[in-house]
Figure 1 (tube, each protein chain N blue to C red):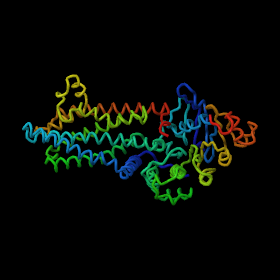
Figure 2: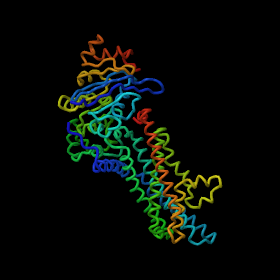
Figure 3: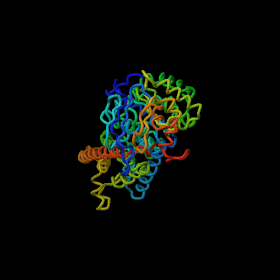
Figure 4: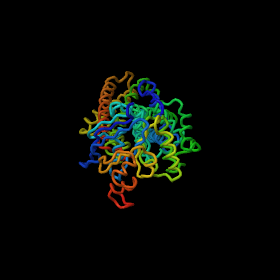
Length: 273
Length: 246
């Protein structure tokens, strides 16, 4: 028996965050099927939307603009998608491997655990976005860097929005059990058309436009598209995206905290033992 | 000395059925306590409340003086937990798994500790094995090694030998005897194996229908209920014929 190590302090916290990331990196390294999301899917998306854009351009005579719009959209989409899916599937892996109880009986705090997942997500995101950007460049000569440094803050907003959506999925799994895992992928199929990844929200049916306007991702994608056509940074769209993302993140935190409280009170850990 | 575990007045109900009913549980440093009782008696729920992963409807829990849930990180730094039903996650080697949990407990010398802990339970040869290569018994052993890695003052084990063959179960008991006792870690375990409880525990807390019906040394509990041993008491309190479960 030895004295317990201190659980407070920045170093202790960082070590625990790194331990969670390390665990998920080990799993990722030995799970070839998990590379589908960060290698094959980005490539397929580039191929699909690049070819679609090229076809429309040829038929409609819109030059390279359509392909560029679609490819810029898919690059931005992967930033959101990868951020969300890494957090969601990381937690789902804890559930499917029945490791949640063991993890909960360690000094790790909930925020540290989520930070560990988010860190793994960032690494996957960099790989996937590099892949989708490389495919867009090699196959369609679309250089994502032409969007300029303005892409960085917009990407940051999308990453935070992705994490927030991931938190909603975790909250749903805590509340409803592993059966809610369908939301990990399903939520993105809902978000994609409503966010106007490839078009303005005015293109949506009128009754859906207010829903679209309420989503931070809509404004982030609009800002991203503006980078293609405008010289000036789209401050208005970016401000809206940042504010609504902050609201979404606050809602997601409140939701997951509430779901975790119910999880503890109802003894739902027994579902995962 | 501060008790390593103090749980007072624990109550838990699910769907209006009271699973745990005003349970008090205290474990002194170095003490070995077994929670015994038939299926559905509330043993695991009590343990999970003591670990802070199930919130009691009423009652309080403190581990080494740290109150749950407010001081949960400090409390959990002082407890190790393993269960026979908890598998080791796939796609990870034993030493990697131990390294992850060692770091979660803030250990710097995790490699040396892991080697020593694996040796204590006679499984140092499994250090490089992948989880998928291990038998369920070996996984249970690795789980116990993980729980002891940071040498906590309180070790909580739920049915630790349930899936083990007699030889491995003996090795686990020997390892636990080595680890837990006066001047060393305290042990809180649940088991259906009354012989094991008699060999390992200084004290037995017998639960029936969510209530503590006995709390004393194994021999005294047997005497209290007029049984010749704990198994006899178990069968009387469980109220079931041999071999059936409630």
